[in-house]
Amino acid sequence: MRIHVITRWQARVLIAGLAKIFLTVIVVLSLASGSWRLIQAGRQLSLHVPGYSAWLSLPLLEGILNEGLPTLALRVANSPRDNSGQALAAAVQVLASPLVVFPGGTEEARFLTTEEKYELPPPADGNLPEESLPPAPSELKTPGNKHPLVAIYNSHNAESYQPSQGQAKIPGKNGGISQVAGVLADTLHQDYGIPVVRSTTIHDYPDFARSYINSEKTLQRLLAENPSVLTALDIHRDAGLPAAPVVEIDNQKVAQVLIIVGSDTRLEHPNWRQNEAFAHRLAKKMDALYPGLSRGVRVLEGRYNQHLHPRALLLEIGSDNNTLEEAERSARLVARALAAIIEDLQQENPAQSG
Image 1 (cartoon, rainbow, N blue to C red):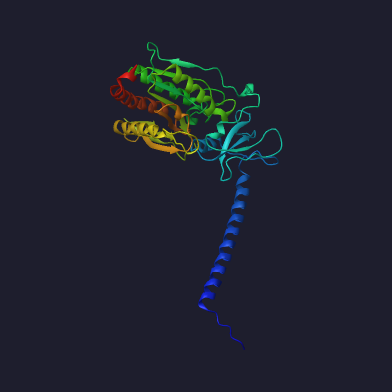
Image 2: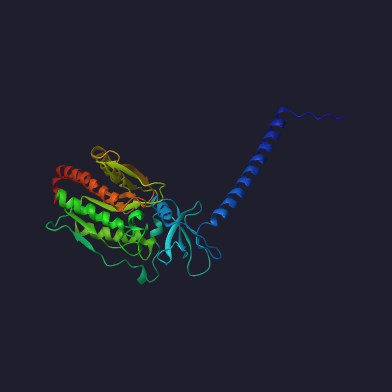
């Protein structure tokens, strides 16, 4: 009988080879398992791909959009849960390429990045189709002052508060979030004497994917017509949270506020740190006046029109599962914190106070 002696080096090579084979098998099994789970989950989702159809809740889709994750713009098929009975633009997180087009048909699903998703290329003739144009602008200025210090608008006008309004969105209309923006504007003006310009222009209908393109034009116009503005606020509400973000202040339930800051990760935004500094300043003031009101500051990859002003912020006032009353109470408290900061800004920069 012939005995074959294996050297230590050969043993190491053999073990390394077996380890690679083992890892390869594990990866293949994991991919197969993940694919099967994806197929199973897909039966509960609504991806409108030729020959396939299912359902996803719109609040979850909006939450993904607001988080600034890579997204897929889709047409949601009509279902019993689609109260509007119309196709809605939506987005879901994907781990694939930031831009993919499914072939076939005139309605195509596109993988799009967080903010680039709003910047769809115009037609070759340079004219936007009529249905993509936003409604006529509508600006409301507080009376008696020609120099507003705060500009307020909503990129996602349809956002609402489901417990109070029965649905998370009211497509084509100014939903609960617009009422909250109105409370913020009225409180600043009536209680603290701060002049405000507010836009009620609808930006998210009929094409939700163009919300930020449309609202960017609105903000550009507001700032051009009102150079006295010290801060610009895009008012939203969060979505997809397991529970309503709420805190008790003065024995009342109040919706918590998350401050969103866009960075320069995907689009040019060299001065975004100024927005971030202002966001932390507002959060600190909110903490000092009303502990628990602020959910802090979150930096995301989208730009959210904040490149247009050094103190432009996106405020998430509550979530779709807060009540409208909780959000309105929150807006009044935010107004007080803003008023204190604006007073400081006027003292620091008298020339800017108008």
